[in-house]
Amino acid sequence: MAQKSNFEEIYTFLNEKFSDETEYLQAVHEVLEDIVPIYNANEVYKAFDIVKRICMPERIIYFTVSWMNSEGNVEINQGWRVQHNSAMGPYKGGLRFHHTVNLSVLKFLAFEQCFKNALTGLPMGGGKGGSDFNPKGRSDRDIMLFCQAFMRELQRHIGANTDVPAGDINVGAREIGYLYGEYRRLNNRFEGVLTGKGLEFGGSYVRTEATGFGLVYFLEAVCKQKNTEIEGKTITVSGAGNVALHAALKAVEKGGKVISLSNSRGLLHAAEGFTDKALKWAIDNHANRENVLTDMADKNMGEWVSDKKPWHLKCDIALPCATQNELLEDDAKALLDNGCKMVLEGANMPCTNKAQTLFLDAKIVYVPGKASNAGGVALSGLEMSQNAMFNQRKANVLDDQLYAIMESIHQRCVDEGKSVGDENHYIDYMKGANIAAFRRLADAMVAQGV
Ligand code: GLU
Image (cartoon, rainbow, N blue to C red; front, side, top):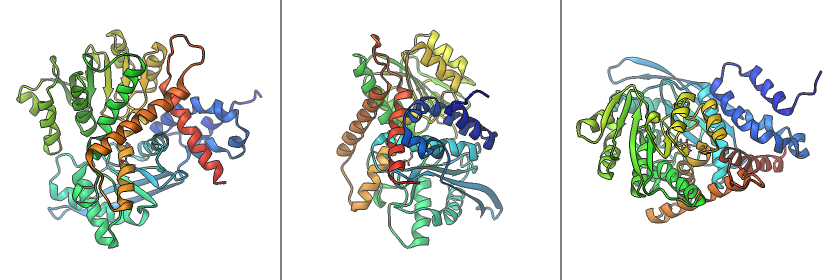
């Protein structure tokens, strides 16, 4: 029998064990291709079986959330926390409340989070959690009751030095406030056990903006590298949540023309580009609206197109900021046919494997979310350090720190992703991000033994 390569052996092992966890296998596959050569060349990594261990969560907590809604009816949801790897610091990563949440989705997110957190250079391990509860369209009181019931269970597994959750899709400042209040009541402790808190109770300036702003800071670093600038570029953005809106706002501030936002129901197209006033209105209102984009269309801030995605629009730069696997092979083809030169992910794994391959083969700039959307968790790391010191830094100081962190992540990707001797100076950001993060994580694990 032919000798199997390590890549095949490891992937077959995971594939057999977790065959129904498609998102998890997709995320792992994406990383393995790049890191297995590094692993194969390092006897210590092999002796410690580092790659298999990096792929498997250290612990998964599963619980049922039984709660009574404001009408007195009992509802039952599922809850999870995937504590993936703590070699570099407390488990760190968001909570997602969405009907599509399942173990495979959370395992992929927790796995990605470890690599992302490693790239920030801050002492954070990786985790992710959430529930299949869907807060969209629910009353404020129901959301509070659900958050309290969820935290009653989760609180025994987390702590400022153990596991520090934050927000993710559908978990914003309101939900973090309710979750935090319940933790404090149950534990009688004021500690930085969650990030993304309100400014009055241990939250940090710039945390809300950080993922979207950080994405544009990364884009700026890419542009500098390529001797160009954001000013005058046409940019498509997908999504209509916190990440998409803040990315769009910062891109407009930098002189870009942002022509789209989107959600699962359609697209808001602004042929002349959104104004910063329109985007600020959306930022202030999106959490409380059923469909903030149709409301924007009603205010003449753009044209609403049902059941369409932004990827057929002509643009220089695309920023997918909605959710996993939103950008398919045909979308990638449309972007390339229309001359798109850069794709930077604001969401986690928004491009399918086939879409990624098209971008990489076309040698356009393609930056995976684990690098370009790391600004959110980086600011969470800064919130943790402020909590540990019981202080609150100024917004401009934190914004500068965020900028510096995004530049340093960009540099790490360039150092590991440039091809030696390539006269076109092509940078494979995906390879760069995977290898740079892997080395840090693997070295931390080796140093701590098995
Ligand atoms: N959910 C965000 C992410 O995907 C932030 C996580 C955090 O701040 O812990 O990185």
